[in-house]
Image (tube, rainbow, N blue to C red; front, side):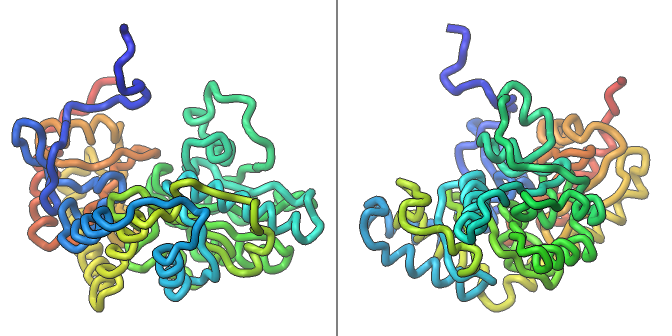
Length: 395
């Protein structure tokens, strides 16, 4: 057979990790990589955090899965913890970010259906957004590379330029259910929304009885120095999708909503066989134990400031390659003047440094949130060496 046992939908590189130690990954031959990718913003406590590992081990030996046919003491406890620390009144647990966004879309539509307005079923989303790989979530983006070959896509979405409030408001009509937006676009190029943009969307939702749906799958769970990125803006959503870091590496996501927004989500309207299983709940609880400790968020903000300053100081030394730094906290991006994917491969293959490419020729810098100054120094040293040894590919 010509096809590989793993369906060939990823251009997998030569890095083959078999072990993780803190902020490092170790390959099959013992090679060590400084991991400033964190599984694309997932491994926020690094790779062998004792509290997370211990919680998973203990729960695995106790009870892993029972389905949602039964009561869930574990799910109820973690859901209450999320409610206590966020805007939300209720939580639905999923296994991934895409599932969390799916639930958020359904919750927004169902809100209007329950109020007798089923025609209000269109969400306004934004150019270059990334919300997942399901049919609904690729329908919610205008990125052709995600949509190509999967038509017909689902109706119910309109698209405006990101961070353009006037263009977004101009799309509101009698069929609008709300807005679906990332406070910080991740895959789209590490672009934080402006204050006026998010405030304007919130105000429009208040004025027109619309749902503000935030996708914080990548930006959430302390990544930006706040529990959720929208806290930087002083606004609250009606519905929010979260995942990635919430499980610290264990597959886990959630859809959070206010009581009003979730009014239509009654028995039988949604479900998940695995969602909220006891093992996932143990992982989520362990992550929250750590990130809610006194000083943790401050540490993320301090390390984020230190990393940003170090990057900004480095740029003038390689201004033929680097253009600028963007992002919040430890969700940073370095804008390049050339193809970021080629440079990410160069850092990985020649300097043992793992980063992630994004749109707009941006290198995503997403380290574990437990990094210290020594890790930042090592990162800058490897990045600088990579810039010096890099030859820009000819067009």
